[in-house]
Picture 1 (cartoon, rainbow, N blue to C red):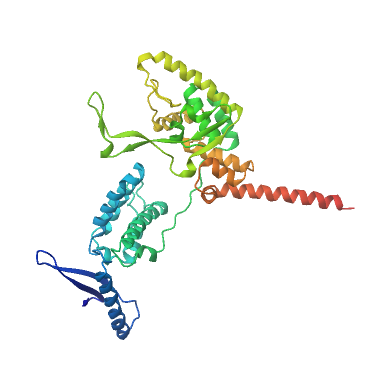
Picture 2 (spheres, rainbow, N blue to C red):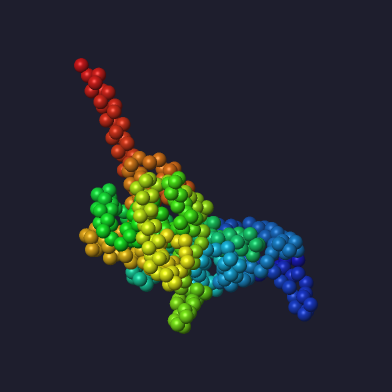
Length: 407
């Protein structure tokens, strides 16, 4: 029979399930907290119902140990999920959990309450939490913490470590969508002109980022088989990333320790695997670049590392995605261009498509977004501007008709 004891308005319900082979009593426990405003009579009645339900669950084998601490469960969850997570996602979760566990890791799953999460999110927004800026964390970063906590508690609920998922009772932190940084049409043209006299590798890399809107990791992952010269398409099948962390430490032939390595993986979502149509100008650019690529292969002789990658180190080795960013930083300063990054060229491509009146579904498909809502949320200002121009065009048509009918 279930028993209970009250402490500071909380009721611990205990159920004995006999004894183990060592003679130790097996006990399951849960904590029940009455809702605010309940009378003592209502509390007594609901307490008996909770005791009955909990005992039935225990006898049916439906209750695991809710006394496990959040940090212990979270680490177990992350360890079991490692093989299903992308390397960068796993490292990101590790980083988020270090902050989460420092604040709430000591709390038992069964004792976690909505106010624990609310206080934690409030603390994350306080000045000084972000060591780099000295400010609080952004709403977007706080939301990342909430989502991870929600996934972990949701899993604990499914596994019946807890009777309810308290993260569903908390209002998620609001994340303000930052306006994307991109080049306008005039600066984009200025960039194209400036690229005419730079080395073939950098000219082709930056122009492809601008013309196709692909991500820099997708660019580095391109292989010659991804280019359909006759069909005039580029297919995105993989991405290259640089991953840090102890798991990725390695030593080279000179016994030098490297604290990260390049990995190749499938794009981030199924929709990121896509085929992008290009024009004759882009195909001509790639054809010209391939001649340079073949010269590099011939000139390097035995030093050449066999590869099918388009963008390479001088000896054919895989190119580091950061090298594109490094070159870009030097390039815009030298040519008196507005500051931009490789990802800014992606935003520029998408913004120019929207400005040109390309339908949002086609824009989303070329960008590799999971759905058109993602595109709409990120490029809301560009879409609003395009809508305003459309309204002016429609108004112009009707105004002309009205003028024509005037005597």
